[in-house]
Image (tube, rainbow, N blue to C red; front, side, top):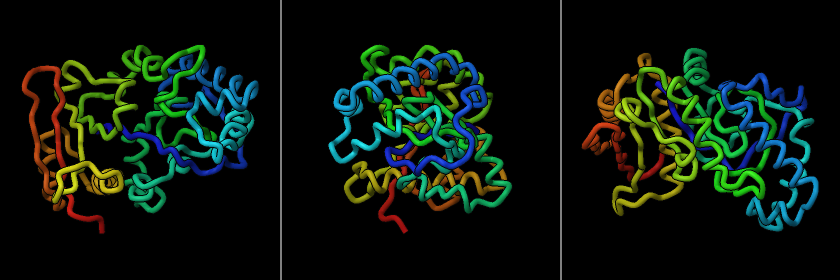
Amino acid sequence: MLVLLPPSEGKASSGRGAPLKPESLSLPGLTEARAAVLDELVDLCAADEDKAREVLGLSEGLRGEIAKNVDLRTAGARPAGEIYTGVLYDALDLASLPTAAKKRAARSLLVFSGLWGAVRVTDRIPSYRCSMGVKLPGLGALGAHWRAPMADVLPEVAGEGLVLDLRSSAYAAAWKPKGEVAGRTATVRVLHAPTRKVVSHFNKATKGRIVRSLLAASGAPGTPGELVEALRDQGYVVEAEAPGRAGQAWSLDVLVDEIH
């Protein structure tokens, strides 16, 4: 099972340990594309704070994030699973998982990123600010920048099992499963049952809880159909739509009344 996650806008502070080692990150096929984004982001933030704030879409109150980007090469790094915070990651609570589930998380979770493309939760990265929706002056829109390298790397990473896609639309733009990979991919929406609308908190928290429960289970589902049954066994109300033709992903709606 491969689980595709969005990052979080909010991030923990960088650690006090060794700085980033780009060559140590997973998915080495993304190294060149990562270096291009890192170089331009650092240069932009170091040269013109006001322009950087505009490009990154930051409010005046988040101006301090620009200095964080300037120091990306020298700041201490921590596992990505500790850097990313927010509703989804709070619900997932990687730190409290049993040992076996942590090992599954290290193998199964892939966090998409405007800066890194995608990283494992065990990859050591510094805290940063750069969403996939950013359009850098030199490289252009990051979603488009990542499309070609992702298309080369991700099919192999997906292996032969289930791909559970929990990304938001901005991050889904960087890689869309195709062909037979799409046929074993399931995208998930979390809907507030009374209104049948996506509500941000319900959506993020429930996705975190779903991933946590799947990691804690003794056996991972191997197909979208098995995922539907696994979620229903865990008490979720799931409406599933199988693909109508080859090359399409399954669509799953999880209906939630409230978060406990």
